[in-house]
Length: 297
Image (tube, rainbow, N blue to C red; front, side):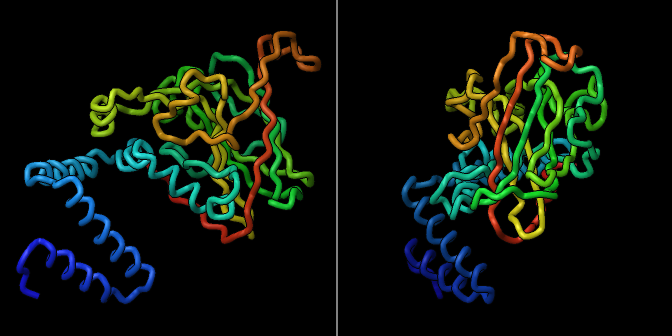
C-alpha cells in the first residue's frame, strides 16, 4: 500500500508479516512488529536514538569472539534469559524448576570422572567442597544413567578459559548417575564474579548504577533420553550479591545449602578445615532431549 501516515506503516508491515508461511514464524513476526512499533510510539523514539540503537546492535555483533558473547550477556542483563527459562519450564511457569541459565562458559567434551572423583586439575587454592547431587523426575523417582556435566568458576572468580593459571578443563567434569540417581565429587568452593564490563553491557550497567556481579554458583547440564535437558545453577545464599544478581538468575528453587565444616573431615585426613558440603536434588521434566550449542568456542 502507499503509506499516507505513521499508522499505515504498522498496518502494512503487519499485513506482510501475516503472509509468512510457517505458522510459528508468522506468530512471532506479527507479534514482534506489533510490539516493536508500539514501543517506538510509546517512547517516541527519535531519529538520533534510532541510529544509536542500530549502531549498538552492530557493535554487539562485532564484540562476538571465541571467548565472549555480548548478545547473551545483554539478554541476561535485561532479564530476558531468565524470563524465557521460567516460562518454558516448571510446567510452563506454574511450578518451581531446577532449570536456569546456560551462561557463556559451558564447553563441550568435559572429561569423564567417576563418582567420588575430583574435577580439580591444577593447583587451585581454596576450601574443599564436597558435592552430593541427586537427579529425580517430577514424580520423585530417581533418574539413573543421566549424564551430568559440571563446571564452575574458581575461588578467584574466573573460569578456566579466562585464566592462564588454570589447566585446560580445570573445574569441569562429566558424571553418570547411579541406580539411585546420585552422583558425588570433590572440588573447591567457588566465589561470585563480575561479568565483563568492557562492552555495551558495561555501559548499560554504569548508566543504571548497577554492579556487575553474579553470586557464587555451581553449573550443571543434565541429559538423558526422554527428558528435557536440564541446565541449572545452584547458588550460595550467603553470597553478598544473592539478592542483586546482575543476570536475574537466582530463584528460590536454586538456593543451595553450602554447609561450612570447621572440624577435620571424619574419614579423609587430606581435607582440612574449613571445608564445605553441598547436597542438592535436581528435578528433570519429561520432554525432547535437545542439547544446546556452546555460546562460545
